[in-house]
Length: 345
Image (tube, rainbow, N blue to C red):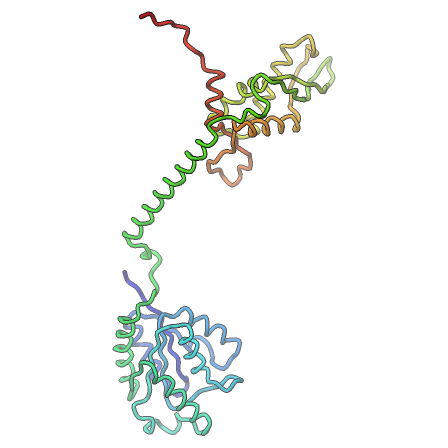
């Protein structure tokens, strides 16, 4: 896979402009991504956070020493040395490049301050405890960086950067597909396992032919007036299952189930002229929230229904209900028609 590495270049700046340019050109020819002082001015404490972030994202770190120690922080440490110490602390592979003959560096490119010169010598000694190469001039430095970085990459593999459209190899795609298949299998087993654990209803709760009274509101127009009357209808739990169960073989939204039961209650009212007024128009029946909630809670307690699991659109806020395996078995036992044919042998 085509992988590129980000390489942080650390050095003083004004005295090593030509050398830095040569190093950056060498890195670009190696398809590396150079990063360093050109991105931000040294000596700015606000920039130190940015500098650290760029170092953290880099795969390799190169430090180039010349004849100057460089601008220093309030603690008296040059920003170049601070960058070097931070890269070492992070465990980033580092390589140093030091002048082959410090005495040949032009006076204008050296520290005239004795304290700064001492700090530079101490810093050079620190850098030379790790992998270093000597350089004579800008062109020599460029070639030394190329050979040195090849060695550093070969012996210290790093993640690097990959184009987004090339990030996944065919092997990676195949591995992801295999993992997705395994996840699907585990999810299927989990569902099957949960179904197995609720294969029987919990008959410790009211069920079967036991009765429940459900409150409702009966609305419509009667003798040219809008009328609303409260009332109750008595059902067995089996009757409720027979009405709602077929709609929950597959998942059904609660508003649809409630409307189905409202229509069933209206039909009951219209057929019961003895207890309910007749001759209504635009007639409707609506179960109360409390009564409907009692139905849902009871059917869940009996382990006959459970919430739906299919994916919905974001705009679909309805609660979906479906029969459990126990609920499906129970519905079949209520509504399936047995054959009356007797086989004669």
